[in-house]
Length: 123
Image 1 (cartoon, rainbow, N blue to C red):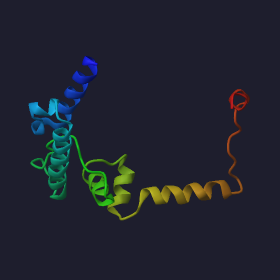
Image 2 (image 1 turned 120 degrees about the vertical axis):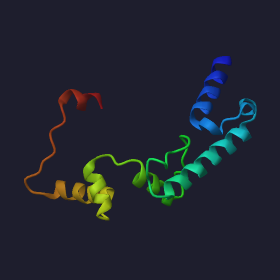
Image 3 (image 1 turned 90 degrees about the vertical axis):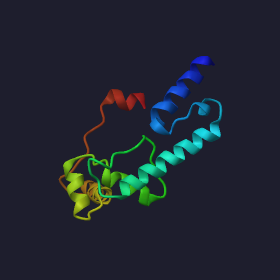
Protein backbone atom coordinates (compact mmCIF):
# COMPACT_ATOMS: atom_id res chain seq x y z
CA UNK A 1 0.00 0.00 0.00
CA UNK A 2 2.84 2.39 0.88
CA UNK A 3 4.59 1.71 -2.44
CA UNK A 4 1.41 2.50 -4.39
CA UNK A 5 0.95 5.80 -2.51
CA UNK A 6 4.58 6.80 -3.09
CA UNK A 7 4.29 5.94 -6.79
CA UNK A 8 1.07 7.96 -7.14
CA UNK A 9 2.63 10.96 -5.39
CA UNK A 10 5.78 10.78 -7.52
CA UNK A 11 3.77 10.57 -10.76
CA UNK A 12 1.51 13.46 -9.75
CA UNK A 13 4.55 15.58 -8.87
CA UNK A 14 6.27 14.59 -12.12
CA UNK A 15 3.26 15.38 -14.32
CA UNK A 16 2.15 18.60 -12.64
CA UNK A 17 5.56 20.23 -12.22
CA UNK A 18 5.04 23.72 -10.76
CA UNK A 19 1.31 23.04 -10.33
CA UNK A 20 2.03 20.43 -7.65
CA UNK A 21 1.32 21.37 -4.03
CA UNK A 22 2.25 19.16 -1.01
CA UNK A 23 -1.37 19.00 0.22
CA UNK A 24 -2.25 17.10 -2.98
CA UNK A 25 -0.74 13.98 -1.41
CA UNK A 26 -3.89 13.59 0.70
CA UNK A 27 -6.61 15.25 -1.39
CA UNK A 28 -7.60 13.78 -4.75
CA UNK A 29 -9.84 16.78 -5.56
CA UNK A 30 -6.77 19.03 -5.38
CA UNK A 31 -4.95 16.63 -7.72
CA UNK A 32 -7.84 16.81 -10.18
CA UNK A 33 -7.89 20.62 -10.01
CA UNK A 34 -4.12 20.68 -10.49
CA UNK A 35 -4.38 18.57 -13.64
CA UNK A 36 -7.22 20.76 -14.89
CA UNK A 37 -5.23 23.95 -14.23
CA UNK A 38 -2.10 22.57 -15.90
CA UNK A 39 -4.04 21.40 -18.94
CA UNK A 40 -5.82 24.75 -19.21
CA UNK A 41 -2.52 26.61 -19.10
CA UNK A 42 -0.96 24.26 -21.67
CA UNK A 43 -3.95 24.78 -23.93
CA UNK A 44 -3.54 28.55 -23.62
CA UNK A 45 0.17 28.27 -24.47
CA UNK A 46 -0.50 25.98 -27.45
CA UNK A 47 -3.19 28.24 -28.86
CA UNK A 48 -0.60 31.01 -29.32
CA UNK A 49 2.00 30.73 -32.03
CA UNK A 50 4.52 28.06 -31.09
CA UNK A 51 7.94 29.42 -30.27
CA UNK A 52 10.81 28.71 -27.91
CA UNK A 53 9.09 30.91 -25.31
CA UNK A 54 5.77 29.01 -25.54
CA UNK A 55 6.83 25.78 -23.89
CA UNK A 56 4.38 23.45 -22.17
CA UNK A 57 4.23 24.18 -18.45
CA UNK A 58 3.38 20.61 -17.41
CA UNK A 59 2.51 17.28 -19.04
CA UNK A 60 -1.32 17.31 -18.98
CA UNK A 61 -3.23 18.59 -22.00
CA UNK A 62 -6.94 18.42 -22.78
CA UNK A 63 -7.73 15.82 -25.45
CA UNK A 64 -11.46 16.52 -25.64
CA UNK A 65 -13.23 18.31 -27.24
CA UNK A 66 -11.74 17.43 -30.61
CA UNK A 67 -10.46 20.98 -31.27
CA UNK A 68 -8.05 20.63 -28.36
CA UNK A 69 -6.88 17.24 -29.62
CA UNK A 70 -6.18 18.63 -33.09
CA UNK A 71 -4.45 21.66 -31.59
CA UNK A 72 -2.08 19.35 -29.70
CA UNK A 73 -1.42 17.26 -32.82
CA UNK A 74 -0.79 20.35 -34.91
CA UNK A 75 1.44 22.08 -32.36
CA UNK A 76 3.37 19.24 -30.77
CA UNK A 77 3.23 15.95 -32.63
CA UNK A 78 3.40 14.67 -36.17
CA UNK A 79 4.10 10.95 -36.65
CA UNK A 80 6.31 11.69 -39.65
CA UNK A 81 7.19 14.39 -42.19
CA UNK A 82 4.64 13.15 -44.73
CA UNK A 83 1.82 13.45 -42.19
CA UNK A 84 3.00 16.95 -41.31
CA UNK A 85 3.07 17.95 -44.98
CA UNK A 86 -0.40 16.47 -45.61
CA UNK A 87 -1.76 18.29 -42.55
CA UNK A 88 -0.34 21.61 -43.71
CA UNK A 89 -1.92 20.98 -47.15
CA UNK A 90 -5.27 20.44 -45.44
CA UNK A 91 -5.42 16.70 -46.16
CA UNK A 92 -6.64 14.42 -43.37
CA UNK A 93 -3.98 11.69 -43.26
CA UNK A 94 -6.29 9.24 -41.45
CA UNK A 95 -9.00 9.69 -44.09
CA UNK A 96 -6.45 9.23 -46.87
CA UNK A 97 -5.16 6.07 -45.18
CA UNK A 98 -8.71 4.68 -44.93
CA UNK A 99 -9.38 5.37 -48.62
CA UNK A 100 -6.14 3.74 -49.77
CA UNK A 101 -6.81 0.73 -47.53
CA UNK A 102 -10.23 0.29 -49.12
CA UNK A 103 -8.72 0.40 -52.62
CA UNK A 104 -5.91 -2.09 -52.06
CA UNK A 105 -7.99 -5.28 -51.68
CA UNK A 106 -10.08 -4.40 -54.76
CA UNK A 107 -7.05 -4.13 -57.04
CA UNK A 108 -6.89 -7.22 -59.33
CA UNK A 109 -3.16 -7.88 -58.89
CA UNK A 110 -3.29 -7.45 -55.13
CA UNK A 111 -3.45 -10.50 -52.90
CA UNK A 112 -3.00 -10.70 -49.17
CA UNK A 113 -0.11 -12.92 -48.09
CA UNK A 114 -1.14 -16.37 -46.91
CA UNK A 115 -1.28 -16.85 -43.18
CA UNK A 116 1.43 -19.23 -41.92
CA UNK A 117 0.04 -22.64 -40.99
CA UNK A 118 1.38 -22.47 -37.42
CA UNK A 119 -0.39 -19.14 -36.85
CA UNK A 120 -3.65 -20.42 -38.39
CA UNK A 121 -3.49 -23.47 -36.10
CA UNK A 122 -2.95 -21.24 -33.05
CA UNK A 123 -6.11 -19.28 -33.84
